[in-house]
Picture 1 (tube, rainbow, N blue to C red):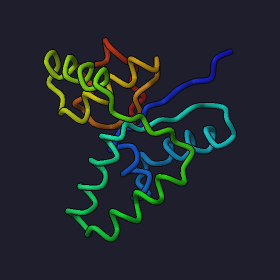
Picture 2 (cartoon, rainbow, N blue to C red):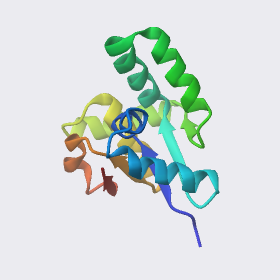
Picture 3 (tube, one colour):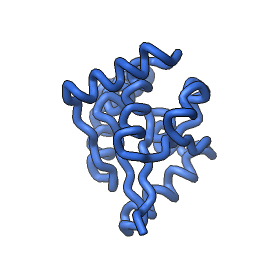
Picture 4 (cartoon, one colour):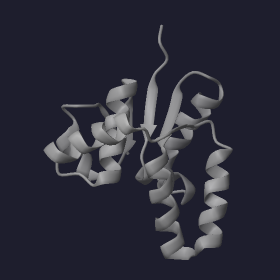
Amino acid sequence: MKKPKYILDSYALLAYFQAEPAGVEVRNILKAASSNQVAAFLSIISLGEIYYIIARKIGEEKADASVKDISCLPIGLIDVTTERVLAAAHVKARHPVSYADAFVVAAAVEYSATIVTGDPEFKGTESLAAVLWL
């Protein structure tokens, strides 16, 4: 049996780091990923989004620390390739989502994974990829 795959978006990881109620489900996914029951991924574009959100709110030092913390989590980073940029652009052209979120959707399609988020922008993309709502 194939193990479940999840694409975490910035909303999910920020909820986890801020110990919000929505972060509990993210913690459960990360626990399952650390015991190899599921696979968790993060687009490198979402990593950048997390960085700038934290840097704006509480400073670059904390943003740097958060990136380091993410690197210790059982999350595979999805790099940007020409194919992935074009797949995200295709999503963005057809759906009212941010460009960063378009990368999340494109990754979910590519990996046959479920998007983990609480961001309502993804409501319009549920025909492309399943969403686990936080």
